[in-house]
Image (tube, rainbow, N blue to C red; front, side, top):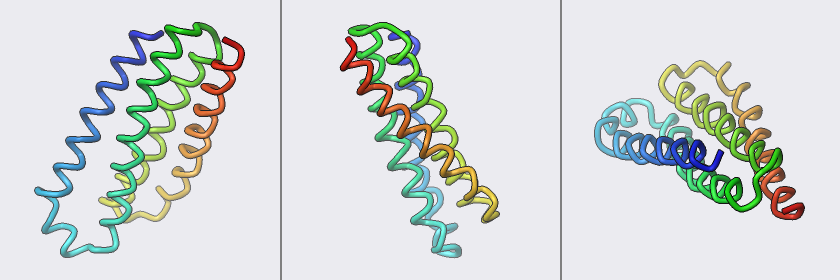
Length: 124
């Protein structure tokens, strides 16, 4: 699991930095026309990058304390990134408010990932 989560953390980190750069440069005109979407996009990038790093911590935990809890932490954080940041990216571009209903599911997955990481450490 540690290798899988390290690869996922690297992919998520790469895509987060790419999204941030894309938003800062290529999407400047879009955000000038739709300024209300800028904060949503920035939040998506912030959580995307922060949790890519957290996924790296979960990879380390999976190597240090292998088991169900550290695996759950990695998978929950991966799913949380996709649901939370993914829904915010989609909301930014589509401006369909329905995507906002998916975001809390991602937030719960991220919270559960952090909690699972804590349990892995306590039981390890």
